Length: 229
Image (tube, rainbow, N blue to C red):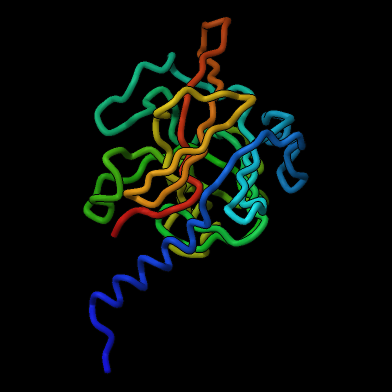
């Protein structure tokens, strides 16, 4: 007897929920960036990070943010479909470590390991319709293949990120404007029950040319859950 479409839909839904591993929690991680990162990249990152813990109380992912991310201006909201127009595509924003297997926002499997995080934009083509109202992402790049602090151009950015997933498509985590204030010493976690996603809320410190005081950009990085098909 062939399974019905309803049964298949329920199976897909249950699989997606299992992968979410919620509820997630986040805490400050008093640990220096991993040695797997290049010395140049480690020097740019904060000496402490954030640990995301899954529903079983086990570490799911660790995140370290860049101490000062170059920005063209202070944050002033979205510009069309781009939420963070003050950031250059390809700019280094941090690093992430998976202790076990992870999944990106396209539901691609990401092996355990250390990755750099760089800001990127999804292409404006039919292949990405419906993934999100906005185009902002954090791309995962294998640490061993991304030793530089300099911005990466679009082609090497996408190619190196695809290596993280072992496919032809970059490995991406959705990056959204925070719906609540981000606290550096108390990272929040936001669940979107409708989309079955979990996001850690963190402040990105920005270095705006010509400004003595640093700016702050509050973001939500979706660490679990994928775009609806």
